[in-house]
Amino acid sequence: MVQVMPEQMASAKSAHVKRVIAREWLIFVVCLLVAGSVLPIMLWLMLAPTPVTPPEGFIPDVKPVGLRGVYGEFYAALLSKADAAAAWALLFGPYLVVQLVRSIWWAYRIVRTTKAR
Image 1: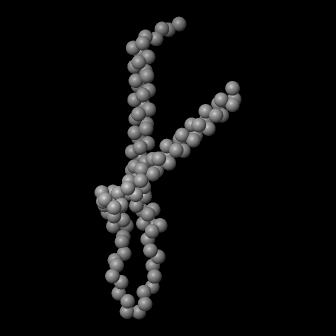
Image 2 (image 1 turned 90 degrees about the horizontal axis):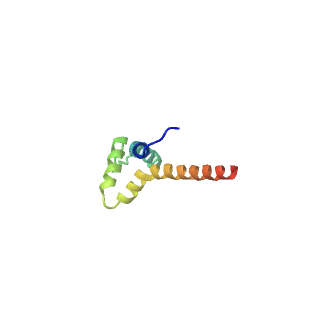
C-alpha cells in the first residue's frame, strides 16, 4: 500500500482547484467574447427598420446605421449613463444562461445518481 503524504494531497488539491478556476475563467471569457461580437449583430438584425419605399420627392433626415455603427453604438451604451444597465445585462446574459444550464444539468445528475442508489 502506498502512503500519500499530506504535502502531496495538498499539492494535488491545489492543482485541481487551479484547473477548476482556469476552466471557469475560460468559460467566462468565451461568453464575453461571443456576446461582445455576436450580440451587436443580432440586435442590429432584429431592430433594424424594414426598408420602406419613400414617396416621390421625400428626402429622409435619418441616415441608416450600418453594421460598423452598431458596434460603436453598443459599446458606447456600455459607458453611457442611460443605457449602461441594459447593455451590461446583455453582455453578461450569455454567461448567466450558461451557468443556469450547467446548474440545472448538475442538479439533474445528482437526482439521477441518488435515485440509482
